[in-house]
Amino acid sequence: MTLLAGSETRKQANMKKTILHLDDEAEIRELLSQYLSARGYRVIPVASPTEALKAIRQETPDLIITDLQLEDADGLEVVEQFRQVLPNTPVILLTGVLIDPHVAAETVGTKVAAYIEKTASLTKLVDEVKRLVGE
Amino acid sequence: MKDHTLRRVYVFFLAIFGVLAAVAVYAVSAINRAQSSSDWVNQTHEVIAEVNSVLSTVRAGEGALRSYVLTGDRRDLAAAREAFATMTEHVEIAKALTRSDSGANAQVSRLEELVNQRSELAERVAAARDAGEMEQVRAMLAEDAGVDAIGEIRRGVERLREEQMALLAARDRESYLQAQKTRWIVGSGVAMNFVLFAAVSWLIRDDLAARRRAAAVLREANEQLDAKVRERTGELAATNERLTAENLERRWANQALEHQLRYNQLIVDSVYDLVFVLTKALNVTRINPAVVHLTGWEAKDLLGGPLQKVLQLEKNEAELDLSPIGPIAQALRDGRELRDRAALIADRRGRRVAARCALFPLRDRDKVVGGILIVHAASVSQEARS
Image (cartoon, rainbow over all chains, first blue to last red; front, side, top):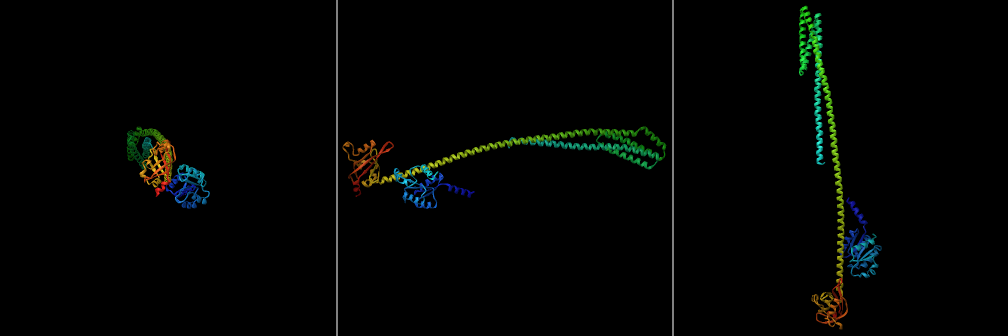
């Protein structure tokens, strides 16, 4: 019964869309993991680009969400590295105040599948996630 | 089972057992009566047989006696004596058998009397014959012929037999009626028990049906309750999920706001020009690090104090009647900006240096609550640094 339940859980887990989330702030990783998990996604939270690259080499996610302003790297450079490894995986870039929202579309907008300001609601973020993973 | 139904079942079973017990008691009584009746019938038949035997042995004895009188053969005398002895024996038995029936017993006693007379007569005749007194024998026999003792014995026997037969017939009718009554009572008891069993069965069946209905109602109520609980649980789960989502949204918004504030603070602090945040009364409420670095004033020296302490505008001709910072106050009252105005910055040492400044009203919705003054003082900075 337990084995069956475990097997079922693994099966359900396999059916869930996987999202890799890169952010150097633990609180944001925790928040987004809780929110996306509650909506049926499997979230792999990572704190650094190195961890992220290691994770995507082990398992191909359906979507990547990354912060633009990372402590030890530039988000756009990390996106380039993601595209080299997983050219077909969509990436959502979370932008903060360091980029002018009026010019973001002409700059980072061309490099990622979507960019969302961190001040936007989680609902909007999930709508974008659904669109990109084809739900 | 409900209490009143159980009580009814007990009452019915009690009635069934009562009827069974009554039927059994009556049946046992009837059997006993039948047994008594059978004993009585057998005894009556024995009485009849005994008195019949009395008659036949009297005749046999009389015949043997007469043979002895005629032939003098001792064997006939022995046969006569034996017949009379047997006759006496039959009479004794009949008397014993009719001991409980006074009427019959009286008749048997009468027979015994007659038979004894015959027996005594026979002994006297035999004695006379043995003595060779034939005249006396003939006289006794002639006397006896006139008495008709045999006929009297025969009539007594027949009367007793007829009475016993009549009693047998009466007893037979009584037995028949008793048997009919027993059959009727046993049949009625069995029928009554069947009816009672049927009633108990109906009662139990009715109770079971009521219990099934009650169970169905209870089951339906439980299902409804379960459905309500599931519905309520679902609502609570949905509410909980919504609250969790709202909480996450709020935390997400808070952290975004915190980021925004932190970055804005960093941006303001990074501005190389002097930034003053003013109230409408032109008191300083906030400055950026550039003010401290470039004028030498500490934040505590300026915050809460008048702007005039550190800055004065160079007036143009139209503003001569205003105070040194009057144009700024006027612009805030009017809710308009000032751009590129010449001003003098007073550093901590009291030196005044020319600068250019701009004022931006600070609005809270449509209301001007203060202003932001940005001062570019390149020459002061050099001196302050030195």
